[in-house]
Image 1 (spheres, protein in one colour):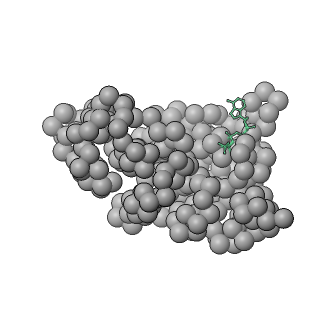
Image 2: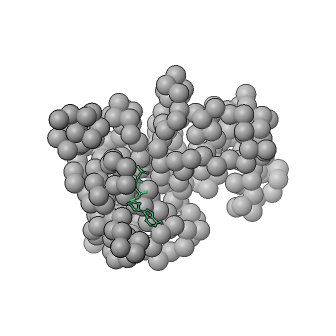
Image 3: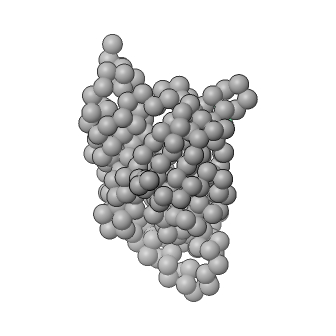
Length: 240
Ligand code: ATP
């Protein structure tokens, strides 16, 4: 059977009595940007966790590039090309931007010299050259998000899961961040799945969308179709 780049097939995740995801079938096309929408508690982070391997589905399957990865460890998934960023960024505050990226590279076992050179490429890509020697703790939220992207690049991802892309980022810094995300796809061919609450951002970034509510997929389609759906408008635009 021909499968899409990433697929979840009727994935259910239950934490005791709480069903966080119920029979979620998601399909992500290679080279496209896919958005996951939904109100608080809808199951978006749990879905990312199920794809990245941080939680195991109670039932259902996860496929990446045609292979069943349902029982693969997070590190195997990372080697296969799945990377993620988090809602709350977690850099080492006392280390410089460059050192933060080098630490991520060191985990791959490259030499210090190679790590330094490769880190420069990623820091340049995300536009943080001027901050490379500054401690990560003094970065703005938007700069931290870009540092997270540089760290994620160090794993050579094919699929990048971005949680709350613009959450906490001041408005003037958003275009620069979005530009980096668009270039990840255009220049590096990375397939992207985003969780994002800002509809304007989503419409400018994503091709397709899945709207989750209470753990279930309620609406799917192009991002424009999903944004226009009554259930989505009610939650995102406060329409009655
Ligand atoms: P938000 O937008 O607030 O981040 P979300 O859509 O990411 O929400 P999840 O964090 O995936 O939603 O949570 C889905 C449901 O599963 C919620 O009811 C949450 O309380 C529950 N849940 C998530 N993780 C756990 C856990 N480890 N143990 C118990 N319940 C959990």
